[in-house]
Picture 1 (spheres, rainbow, N blue to C red):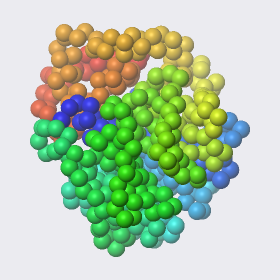
Picture 2: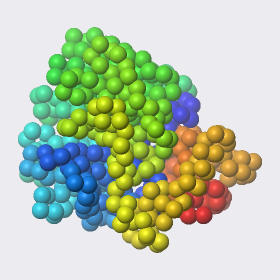
Picture 3: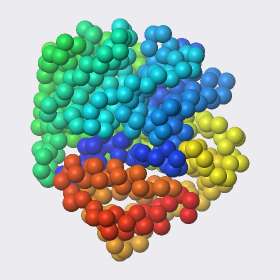
Picture 4: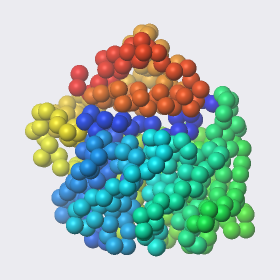
Length: 439
């Protein structure tokens, strides 16, 4: 299995995060959700908060009680509560309209919830990818139901009309080999725990499952290089994409048009009901689009991997960029308690041109810094087994230790020889020397 696929295999986005909210990490918002007033809620990992961008442009942040919680997904319920998952806090959270936050700890060994959705009965569904992989539901009475996924782990979840959920499930290759050793499934999970498997294929890695009003299920499949649609009668229709594409997220609008963000090709895509594809390349490369949502006013909201901006693509195809609280942060010289500080913010704003030039040069060369050093060798041989080289070239962090901790976890899953303490020290020194934001 090649390094690019292995990186995606571990849910792509989650590989980029670092656990320490006090480090200035280059990382955009994981999720957006728009409320009835047109406010846009978004996650702020560096600020350890969930925040709201009001229609007038003001931003209100709600700091989380748990330190370094890493909020990773959002959902609104019918009462106006904002629900979120704390990926590193191992909790679900609820922000009430009056600003009070309630947390719900999850059981298990280091739980890592990462997706959330609220059903019509105010049940809160979530995905949890750690030992064991499961789907969970927090009932209105506070009880949590767990539905264990015994083969593989769920990569996406969407509501089913009967009150259950649709899932895409990935069964990764156990040993080294080609993509054909992975298997993908589409499963219906009932609230009573019953499972119905609609599709299982080798050489498949589905995600982003999205039902439409006609009962058809749309999903992306990185291994099969495209977007597919499964009809109720079992007919499967494929809409091919270039081999290097990675559909990070997607959503259907009211006219049945499927919008998606392609992280590796740095663009937003539009696929209509007839299968006509239109693409909107992003004006700059900041690691590719990372999260998206469709706006009620039309157009697409999206974040970028290495910017803490809220961006919009209008129905007319015009890109605009919202710099979140940039004026308040422009003069900050010292980073405290996880204040956002990458690229556009704080003292780093003054370094933006320099940082962009460094990243552009690194991408153009395609080579690691000090390529013959022991640190670069360790990075190539160990970390790139489950990490995209482009992300290393783009990344600038003030503290690489949390990322090395994540890499250890994924090395174990991918059967890569773990780092010794001496190797860890060497690699950390290499990353801090060549890819540190504050150097």
